[in-house]
Image (cartoon, rainbow, N blue to C red; front, side, top):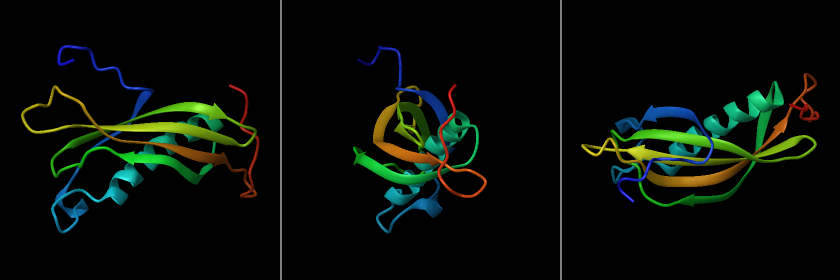
Amino acid sequence: MENEPFSPPGALAIRTIAMPADTNPSGDIFGGWLMSQMDLAGGAVAHTRAKGRVATVAVDAMTFHLPVFVGDELSCYAEIVKIGKTSMHILVTAYVRRGIERHRHIKVTEGTFVYVAIGPDRKPRTVPEE
């Protein structure tokens, strides 16, 4: 497994570094911070696909596999798994690279985020064809 090429689901949507201000009293990164980074990643993909404004309406099946630590490089990969009339389900998978093992990607979290395309009237609109 160590020599297998890294092939995450979807495309890289966001990359950032976990910082001390993002920790809980135990020194681990808050799950809420991680979830917000994943929402930003999924939202960027949804915005592009919807060709405009979107709103997060649900998060399904969020699974925290491993903790994230200060200094970890977090990368969120996103892929559209379902498109409805006004909504999009986007699988977001988060990986970290840490310490001296910067070549190794460790899956820490995954979840499906649901976004709705929003029109200028702030009401749901149809997701346009590609």
